[in-house]
Image (cartoon, rainbow, N blue to C red; front, side, top):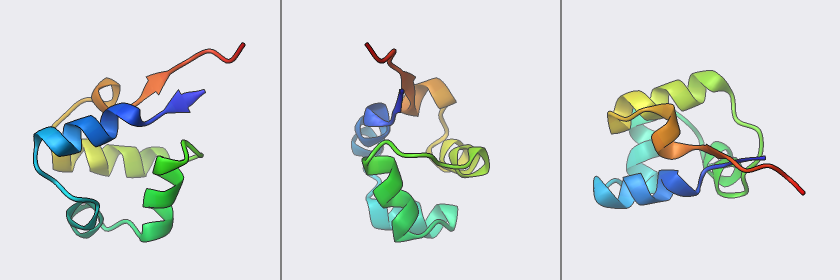
Amino acid sequence: MIVFNKLWDVMREKNVSTYQLREKCGIDSKTVRRLKANENVETKTLNKICVVLDCKLEDIAEFIPEP
């Protein structure tokens, strides 16, 4: 399972709100909801987030094997 718990840590560290993330990335509130719920998100969206936050994918997402 891919989880985005690290994303919220990076956003806190960089003082970026979900509103700012939406505005800078051009994503909608449904996408933010999917990120919070660890649901499917397009790779182009993840790319935009990494560009805006100036980070790597592994800084915002993590693979956790399901039992």
